[in-house]
Every structure is written in C-alpha cells, then in structure tokens.
Length: 114
Length: 112
Image (tube, rainbow over all chains, first blue to last red; front, side, top):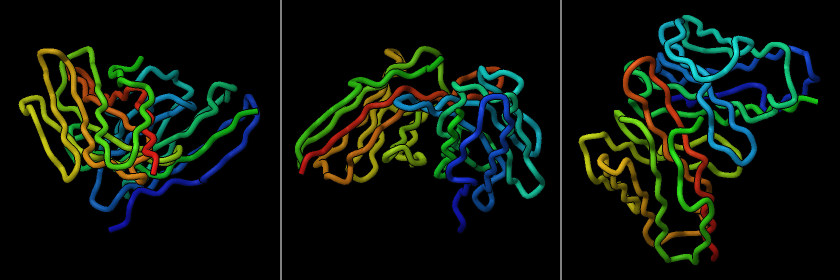
C-alpha cells in the first residue's frame, strides 16, 4: 500500500508569482484535503475534494484553487503569492465518507515566498 | 479561525512519566481526532473518538471526550523520548460543508 506523497519537498517563489503543489493520494482513497500550516500554528483547512468536486472550503481567498484528477491525485494552485503564504502545505487523503474518517497525511511541501 | 485549543501549549517531562494534553472546542462535532507531528513533517493519526463515545484506548494512549464540556484529553502513559512531538486535536464540524479544524497544538518534550 502506497502512502500519501507530495511534491516538491521545498519551493521558493517571489511575491506575485503562481505555484502548483501536487499530491498523490493513498491507494483506495477518493477524498483529498489540503491544509496550510504556518510556523508554530496548527494546520488550517483550505478545501476538500471528493470525486473531482470541491466539497468543503475553509476561509481562504479564491486565489487558492485546486483540482482532483480521475486517479485521485490532486493539485493546489496559489496565484498572486503573498509573503504570508509562506508555510508548510499538507495534503491528506481518506476513504469516501470524507473527514469523519481517519485522514492520512503526506510529508508536506515547504513554500517560502520572498 | 481554529476550533480547538490545546492546553498546555508546551509540556516537558521525564521519560517514564505520563503526559496529559487537553483540547477544548466550540461547536457541535461528529468526532474528534488526535494527531502527532514530528519536527514540521506530516501529521500521523493517533486516535479518533466519536461524539457518542466517552473513552478510547490505543496502546499507551487514552483519549476521553466530554461533549457537555466540549473538551477532550489525551493521556500518554510511560512516555518515551520518541514521543517528543507536537500533538494536535482536530474536529469535524457538523452541518454545512465538512471541515477538519485543528487546534494550535501542544509541544511535548520527553527528556531521556
């Protein structure tokens, strides 16, 4: 059984640029969710995807968008990067039924915005 | 905003001692989950307790849930240096679209 993987591990961008982060779900999972974790804080829920549709969103502006593909892999896109977007971005996958079940997290992508 | 608030923010104990962390939340929940995070890496799921359960065990972990007080506790017995990590509670909000909401975490240090 393959766990959740994320790429890249680290990324440095400048303010105003756009970034795409990728996540590969654990085998058999069809729900994926994304989180932003600032240094010293808990993860903040960005959104969840189920069967390629957004199925729940946290308090993040529209410049945070996502996709889920038929193979249940996922992308997080952030446009017009701001300094405060610097954080660890985590994705998690879970079985159908959504967040009421155990979520399996990837190792994260560390994004630095200069 | 974060639903859960862990207490204490930091805890330092000796190996072999027990560690207790508390979590309070604000709204009705479906379940409450505890996660561990080592050094800014991905989170590892520890235990899930449903809103109709009061206590759950898993190895050296014991979780309690008091929905009337909107609080939960995580007890780690006979702690080990390898338990050093940050611990987060997370709740799934009821009603509307689902969200998994984390607290700010308790940073546990177990000294050998």
